[in-house]
Image 1: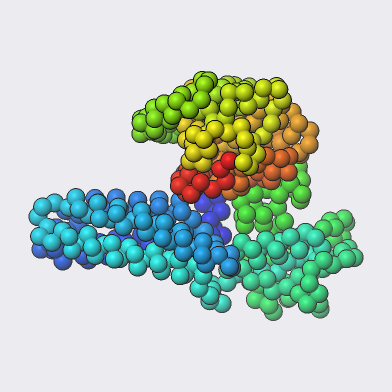
Image 2: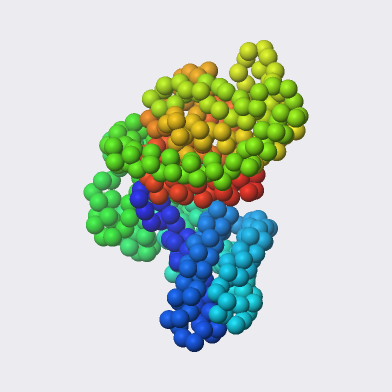
Length: 460
């Protein structure tokens, strides 16, 4: 994993992005230069088209999840993603390179060649996602611990990182019971550094369930780090591997003395300018959709087009949120707040469509322009649920240290939540965002939001 502006990205994803970018530029320049007298002329005539298409393809691939690590047994899903990207990229290539200057004698040849090159690239991306990782590309990981925490680390690595190879587990001095497979336990005769060197370990994850005095061999771990072996604690492992802060293992001291939570004036100002510019552009682009949706809601059922509701925002301050009404006007006629559930009979026919496509969220752009919300941040919740969740879920109030968002890291990483357990699971992603948020992470979330909207994932 590589940390870029506080956000962890897998090495293979970065390599894939760079390869795709280089491939598109190379193919385009070769094909275009064959239609021009010289390469410099090709660049001057088609350079803008090439870079525009490369940028569009990057956004499409990122939003569709083609660069994400693929767990075993998801060949069908990867193929569906590839076909979806092809359905968008091929017409886009044809359209962009159809705008080449009239000086190109065989503009159709360029269009068809680029479509063929892009098709080959995307099909290769789907294949590479499921091809066997070479031993040289694997990261050899030793887990120090043998209890439930170590077991959770092992399961996480096996499920989310095909490039990780667990070489084994070493039980801590005070761990009396082991929950990991007995065959995976290592009998370490020498020091931890000697064991790591003998096994060719690249990284050690300290996952001790018991952390009393004497459990943590600090000197040995320091020797390993000095020898070039990466050493991570349990919380950092989950943060970089899953993009979340696990509530079952995190401590207040780790949050306090670790890095992150940089909420300076500069960052706040940049984020605000970004929100205003993007919200204004989105409002203008989506205006036809907004007007058509308002008309459909008005024709289907009685009641207001917009639904206003109190939500909790920055520093726990309440504000009024605006959404397109997707439920009957008497959805909470008894006065009792309730989360939306799967197949909720309160949702109208138009409501089902706009909720699946996230169109019901568009009026929140007005909240962004007004300053109540940001484009990216934790989902704003109702005061009734906030009071309950603050009592039931540790660290829940931390999510109110930033502005709530129209979309967010938790929204693109976890399905729609309708229980306390779901809220607790989503909070783990919200804490990661609050701790590590930057403009770069906001862009990552916006890219993934495009994929969520196009696929309707997690909608209710």
